[in-house]
Image (cartoon, rainbow, N blue to C red; front, side):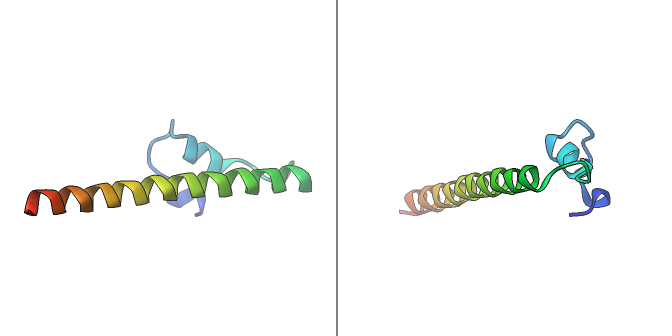
Length: 64
């Protein structure tokens, strides 16, 4: 995602993250950043899956 594609809320942590200059970071810091971001992707995906499954279960329950 390019900075121009960032969410519109200026106080959004994601916006700040995307706009951060990566040039001063060492390879170790970049690797740590990637690890942290992969963890956040996994956490977000798990939450999204839970929301989708929860909705499907609720829909099924109320159709019965």
